[in-house]
Length: 169
Image (cartoon, rainbow, N blue to C red; front, side, top):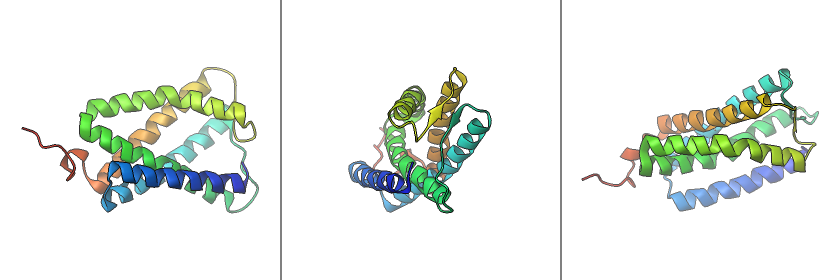
């Protein structure tokens, strides 16, 4: 992935984040929580990428510039942030069970999405054959959603106590 492609991706996801902010009616505290959750999840994703590359399960080529790793980290963080505003709404509406279903859906849909990207843009990512890269990708998605949501909740508080939460009878 080139620097220009990375900047384009970051810009598109920043727009998506703004749209999600609008539709979820997120407060400043919730937005900050989503960004912090994205920053922590990006660290988890980088660790997963490094581990799986060391194990030979996939490879993501990095540009040979000193700032690309920072740019890649920022890209991961901003791509994850909108997810946590959605998980906040899911947790607010459906509780833990809804959040668990959301995580399961992401675990199932994440790997095919990544394999589609890898097939479409082979210079961005290459998967090794076998079931282990698929499982590792799925587990990474579970971790990204769960850890990011947990940090967002830590910063912004539980969804059920939010001012937009439904009153229980």
